[in-house]
Length: 163
Image (cartoon, rainbow, N blue to C red; front, side, top):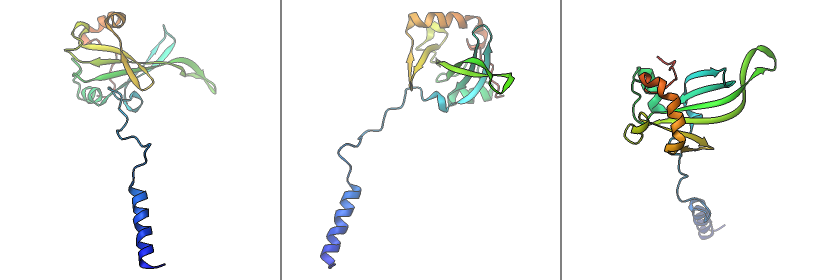
């Protein structure tokens, strides 16, 4: 192989390896506005006997840091608390244990004291796949009514177990 042929092959290989395919995305995929709750850390757990459900309560970094510092009255703006819910069932090999059953929902509370001033500074939403859909005023009303008894805890039932 002569020098010119080798140089041309090297140049062609470089062009092929560095060229962007015509079908490649030019922009990265947008992240959900409030992140992906599956990557968040645990704030607490609850077992609702009245609803026969188990819940893992997780938080974004702002919520986790606030809970660890004991600064949750009030929770800081930007905190997002997610409640991941499952039905409960008995463990198939350990009758004494109750474990998560079928997944039922992932819900959220988003702290923005200006945007959600009418509902104690909290917006309410539900995840649909990786997208958090915030509820409108009408659909948020029952959520806020349920959280009213917790006004002294900034409307949050979760007892952070991180301190």
